[in-house]
Length: 364
Ligand SMILES: O=C(O)C(=O)C[C@]1(C(=O)O)C=C[C@@H](O)C=C1
Image 1 (cartoon, rainbow, N blue to C red):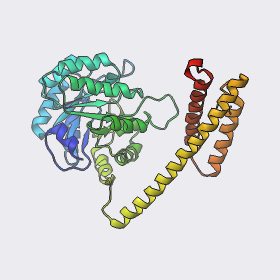
Image 2: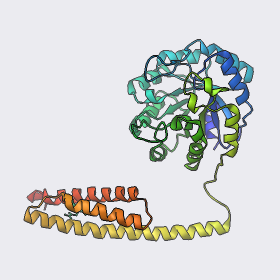
Image 3: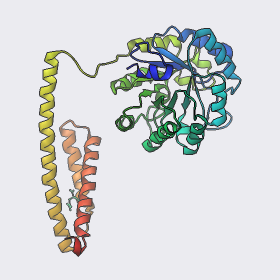
Image 4: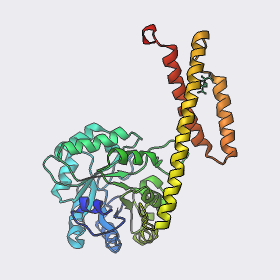
């Protein structure tokens, strides 16, 4: 699990939950120093984060100190010996950060979303050996996230870590950004060689949820955490509600559990194997039922073709939705999940019948 530490810092400290922490923004030398000195005590800490240029949604809010803050970082790097990570959004910021000896760069959600920016940064990193973290794009577009990783790799950047920070939501979620956990899981499936960290601060938007989201990320085998911390969050110039004090962060880290991906207990192993074999059996039964259902859908398709009936049957579909939801409820199943399964089945039925009804005479 310390692969992240090695990639980002070139060292290995055997930490099970690598942590990058620091203020949302570097606001003043005193604020940054006070925070970093307290964070230094957390054994999980592998690097400090500090926003220098802040991409804000609307003008008028604090947009970061800019280049000048890099001097404070250099000072604190010397004093503490800790590596520092900074967000860059274009080539001039990248060049200034590298000149200031910043150890780790990261691309924010508003940068990953734009292939032009990603390409510009990748070009300015050609021939430079620096680790880069890539946050997910603001919208749930896995292709853009993977594309950003590919652009960096093409420019010769080999030390890459992805960061899951949740996705823009216009819904009524309690979180600031929707975690959509299925997307980071898919990212890992498609990019198994790129370690994945979680940024619970941006997902939650509120410090009370940081522990819960961090543990959820660890249970999905994410490789580390990036958490915003400020020595006095209430006076922070940006993201005040989601920052925790270093002391709170220390408690959160102590409470988190890194679970193993297997057990060596022989009884538990046997029990697990027996249960999995039952699941295999049930899954095969589900597949056989799907095959039988497909046969019926094909037969209905033939009937529809012969008698010129439309493929989509709204009334029948509504009846199915109502009935399957009711049965799901009675069985104590998650209605939404069951509905999604039947939506997929229905979509497939329509495709099957489209092929039957629209088959050209030469296809048959
Ligand atoms: O009942 C039908 O007419 C079907 O073709 C079957 C089916 C289904 O998959 O259950 C498929 C398409 C219709 O919109 C409604 C239901």
